[in-house]
Structures are given as structure tokens and as C-alpha cells.
Image (cartoon, rainbow, N blue to C red; front, top):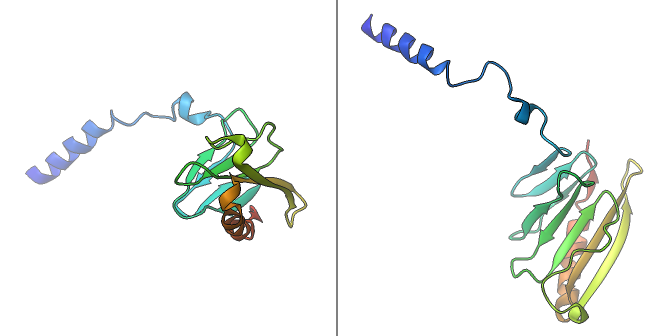
Length: 142
């Protein structure tokens, strides 16, 4: 009996912790839906796998959805966006030592996705191979 009264007291004291409804700042969070896992990035338009070990940077809530995959050494990046990004983000190295591959991919649902690889010229072929692998995972969100 003492145990049950203790449980009842615990439950009644916890009710003051949880608000009776969702606070306004959580009910109206800005920006489009995105999901980021250790394997992929997904928004309302597309889903794409992320390269192993690369950082993921999502777009600001006030802009059209995009994602940047940034190489561990910060000198290469891949861009996947619902609109063309202009100017393109740049790795933190001398622009004259960079090469790029820019494409527009049409998904099965007819939506175009802007994609780009920006990487050092001396490692560009290796980066392009990885970019092609990641491009093959780009699909429309179901």
C-alpha cells in the first residue's frame, strides 16, 4: 500500500513538468522538413545518401531546402538543392585550385534537383568518383 501511494505521489508531482499543450515555439518551428541520419539526408523533395565521414550542413530555415556534404579535410563539398545556389559555397582553399561539376538531375517525379561537386583540381577525379556514387542514391521523397 505504501508503494502504491509513493507511485501516485511520483506521478502527480511529474504532471507539473509537462506542459498541458505544445508550446508555441515548438508548434511553429520555421523551415521545411528535413531528416538527417548517419546514412542519408531527406527533405520533402529528395533523399540522398551522405558520404561516409563527411559533415552534413543543412540550409537555413528561411531558404529553399539544400544540403552540403563537406569533406573531412574541408577542401571539397557536394551540394544538393531544390533551387540553383548562386553563388556556390566554396571550400576554404584558393579558388584557382578548384574544379567543379554542376548538374541538374530530374527525379522520377519530374522535379529537378541542382547538384554540384567542388573539389581541388589535383584530387578531382577521385572526388568525382565518389560524387557519382552519391548521385546514384538521389531519389524523390515518397
